[in-house]
Length: 202
Image (tube, rainbow, N blue to C red; front, side):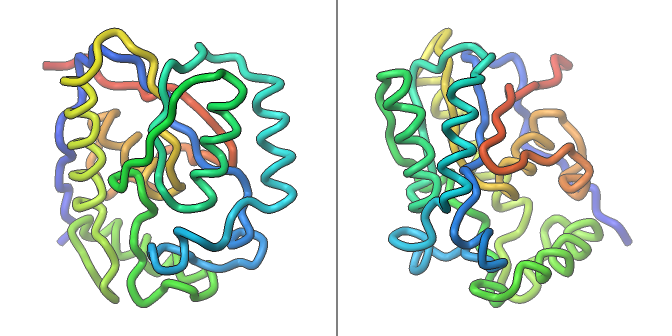
């Protein structure tokens, strides 16, 4: 039976949030899943293509300028966040809650393994098949970060730099959609940035 486990609620936010996926990485170029801190903190940074994407993104930036940046401490997200921070001359800080979703036994495996995990997610967002971090767990840590930022800041524009799956899940939670639908949200491509839109329902 399909589970429609709900996301933690995110609405009536007093800050403005932009979410950004890191630029094309060496792991993307190699077709590998790199989801563990063991491999992602110091290795698999941005590819040359990723650097070019960020240069283009910065030159074409059309959203409001962020005032602060929080980012995953993986190398590819740190390098992405640093480029944006240098451009806007704003502070940045790492936060482990923005890390990549841990893909368990799929770590360092070919990226076609994602599809098996996503099929399991659609049936049950609390599933941890092959020691994968569940969608529900990812949603919990990201929503906890938003809740903390809501206490720390007021009317501030914050850019959150993270990874594909965590951002899909956060966007699903913000839209107040069932978490098992996270792959139905329009995906962020490498170096994409968009506002975090929340439902205004009570």
